[in-house]
Structures are given as C-alpha cells and as structure tokens.
Picture 1: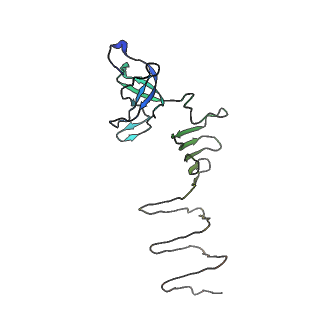
Picture 2: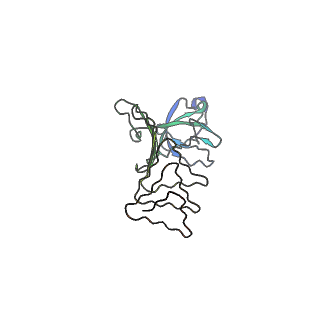
Picture 3: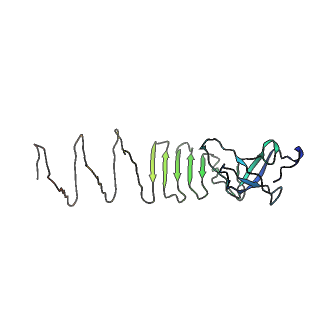
Length: 222
C-alpha cells in the first residue's frame, strides 16, 4: 500500500480492514490487512496490534486470523503506520455468545476450536468455567457456594517434583471409586487421632515379606 503523497493522501479516522497475513517475519505480533472499500489487492504495511496490556515478554497475545475483520487507524493519517485497534464481528463472523432475556451476564474468551473461559455473573448462580471444545473436560468455580468442580472425560494426572498435600481440618475427605490401588516406593503410614476401622465384604488379606508386629495390650482376636 503506497504511502507516497502529501497530507491529502493520508487516511484519518478509523477504517475497516480484513487480515491477509499474520506471519510477521520479525515476530513482533503484527499483521497485514487489505481494505475492500479501497482495493481488492493492495496490502497494508505491517500493522501493530493494540492490546489491553503489553510489555517485555508479557501481555495479551491474541493475534487475529487471516480473513478476520478488524478496525484500523493510521498514525497521523500516514498509510505506512497502521495500527489494529480490535476485531469486529459481522453477519458472517458472529459473536460466540448472545445476550439472553435482556441480561448481559456472560463474558467469554473462546478460541477458534471452541475452548472456552467463561465468566457467568448470574446473580443467583455466578461461576467461572474453563472447558474444552467438547465440554467433556472442565473446571468450574462456583463463586456463590465457594465450590470447585473438576470434570474429566478421561484420565486425570497430577505430577510434581515437590510435595502434594491435601488439607481439610474442618471437614471430611471421601473417595468413592470402583477399584483403588495405593503404591508407595518407600514407607507407607496410616495414622488416626481417633478410631480406625478396616472392613471388607468378602476377604481381607495382609501380606508381608518380613515380620508382622501387633502392639496392643488390649488386643482381641475373634
């Protein structure tokens, strides 16, 4: 897109453009656009993208896709200094959500494959949800009831080089499953400040390669 000419050749105000290239050779997060109202072939210079926050190696990284409609402004009207102010929805590229029942309570960040971060400000049921495109795996934070629910369609893996702790000093911990296996590479210790009970509906087997010690003067075996 030529930048030759005087002030009369400048473009002031904001204009609509369509992204044609997002492969910035300098990796500066820039895009090129064309202006259908001006030319079907001419491409702009590399345009920097305005973001809510940005700095050295930090900030919002949301690069428009090719064919996305964007709002463009030119520094002092100069054609060789375009900036992208934001993206635009239209009749073809529609918004990912809608305002229902005159209540504007939903906020989304949705990727092009359908992964979503959703903020629901419904007064009686506010929550924050992170979910995948198939809605089979999600994390839901219920801000009204202060609960967290994790749902997964397959395996869940927790891995760390440090320590994993579960602390619930005021409540109970329950595990409900089909079969359970607990394996420790080193020692395994179970301690209860109150009573302890082990119950099996069928058989119960205790196996030890070394000795077994029972230390209780009130031990009763029936």
